[in-house]
Image (cartoon, rainbow, N blue to C red):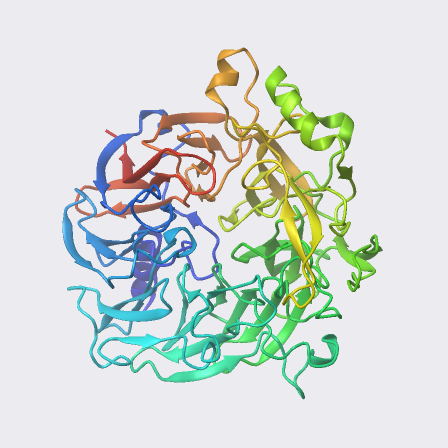
Length: 614
């Protein structure tokens, strides 16, 4: 038995069976063939082109290649922007099989995003569970890619049934891989968040063999359920939003699943949903077997800023009260890191409810306080002033002044008003779905972030409109506070990678992440860039990250933040990297999807790039 346990641990270290490395989303690998001493020797081993890419000229919209592959039982499993699943030979990139759900690409689908799939086995059967933008989950034979006909109807289940029946024309789909707990598939979905009513954001569990519904957790509590009284009147009814579109985490030992929930709809005006609005923007711990709520913490009360919880909760350890505690760390768009005892929900550092400004918008009733963790410090900028406008180029300064001259620069959690308002952080963070990686050796959390504001104002709609006030963007087409070159309008840095000591609640180090080549040529030090995607930390002493909007992939010393390796990708790597070990070649491989595009650039690719030592 002891030998068997050791074999399982070694196998686990070599594989990558979960999107976040393990069920708890640590994004950590015990592999250490690639080290600080030899990382500079990394070379491309192979590249696989999926063929699935859209610049918006043919299909309904642009694509985002955000996938992190799985590696299990000697096979690499990849999902594509068009929701295909591809099995690859891991040493060469040779395609073994492909499954195509044949989604309608003429219909807009949230940037055609598919961040990955999930793997399940009972020791005999092996299945790939794959959610699509059209709201279906497929169960595929991991060896052949063929649907398991005993699952649902002909190998798939329709997730719209039971949550979107009243709203047949509204969007509902899967962009992130579900959690697998024993024989249960636990999943959320993305839903429309622009109108008050819409498909429910409920989290549900299904039997992995049959597809039968096992339990449902109402993310907007119904009458008689805990939290229903946080919704005024019947504002809970058919409420949209309040969903989990990102990745959930699982404490396998305790049987607890952690839900990072988003804002209720509509996301910028809450006059029709007065109250704190549980479980909007809450970290919720559920009994994974039954869906019963164990504890929760709401990170934003009555959200009117689109400050979703975007990232997978990281199951970590930290020293608290002289003891090592199993904890859960939730990083946020606002730049806060919330740290809780994962069994009880007790904060490991104090959290203060601080007064915030009221809203001037008629009918709105902003919540009077918001929670601020005392530690760790914010890893992202949380406000800016008019005198902080950037001047990296004269053109940037001129453009930003033209937008900012009539704008109000207010503290975070100031409601967007009837006048032009600079929202900081912007709606993409802070951090986003890439989340944080965790080093169990030093109990350090690594999180990348961006500092990009938004420029909005609330505009009154005609009488009889579904929502009396809507957000109207000002300036750039995306409403982001940057110029035509995507240089943010405040003084740099504009993006960071931060190492956080979870024992002390302090930064170990913090560095700018990314650069603009044109500015570097002018002699301007690396400014950091907007970034999407996350990091990978390894026992080799390294933090790997793409994410930055400069088509680079980098490795840093995990203890100091010193850059040890950098390479150019075919396009920016807006994805989380992973690593695995091949027993055939006796090599450790580092993998990243380089798709570019997304919301930040016009360079597109469909390349999965794999690196190894010579």
